[in-house]
Length: 149
Image 1 (cartoon, one colour):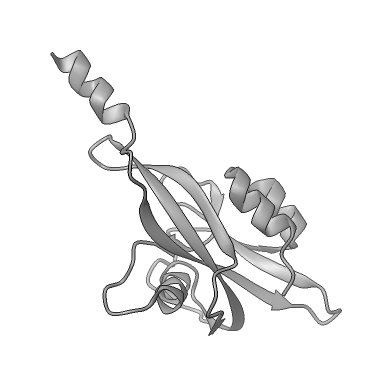
Image 2 (cartoon, helix red, strand yellow):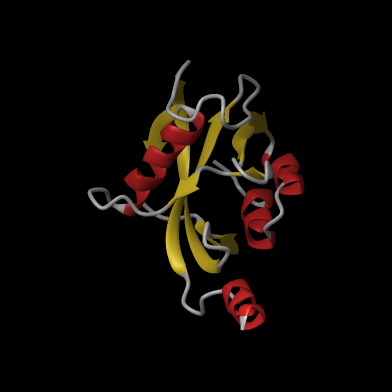
């Protein structure tokens, strides 16, 4: 019986849940664009700030809030999504959840010296092409590789 329970938990839910992500970016003095990656707390993989919807906020502002909480960046969030990527999130229960992530560009105007998840993640500014090489999710790689401000 325990074997079948473990198998059920390992199977992802069929219906994806939605998260909102920010793709923080800035222009360098030479005019080139950089994007900001952060590490996930558990696996330490390179990702972009993302999270579950915040009930009181629309999708773009919800993504911007995640960017502040996870990376300490503030700025102007795009109204329209850049695109979508999918991944399977391991939940605390051991179950996998299919997740659809809507990505919004966030032009960074300020980096705060302190933020809620300071010390829990690493941050790295890099070119979109270099960022694509650091990311595991194929659809997010594609979004990053073709990102222009």
